[in-house]
Image (tube, rainbow, N blue to C red; front, side, top):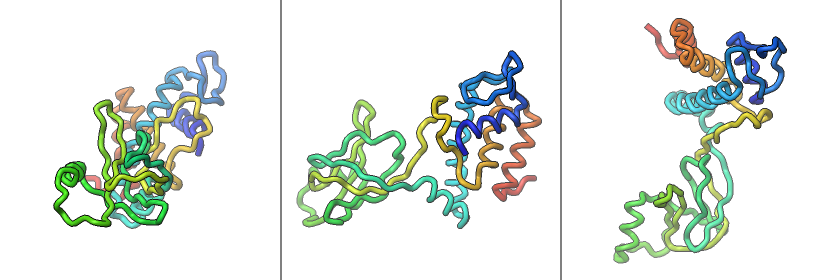
Length: 216
């Protein structure tokens, strides 16, 4: 489902399908009588963030675990120069696997362990390969290798969707098969913002039922 399609469905839920002049809204950037397009896009981003957190929380369910992996685990490549990568994109939450051009795998170690290894050469680590992620003083996150090397790495990483903007009307939002849950979350956020607590409570119950959570 595209962002445009999703926002129009959300507008239908919120009964805000016309502009102030009475024209039916068919694009992403037109403001409705009650909801500005920019605020609805912001609500969609909040709903995506919440859905990502929810499926991670309920990932012990075999179905939710598969959905979580399908939508959050990605593969890509990163250039490593002199043992250090460029700044990691904000969409990358964590690196779970790093392999060099010779198909040799680097094991992740904690940043503190990385610095311990740098200052202590007595441990027998001949032939072992490690990586960690360090945060620079300016906020940049970079991969650091031990021992130092330069190559294009194949990586598996946890992907966190970047912020969708109003110009991204054709961007795909939501999780396949969970669009209705995402729509419930988006409407609930909108109802919270307008202080419609009774409708918000109904949506809370609906969301809980869809997640298989007991409500009492």
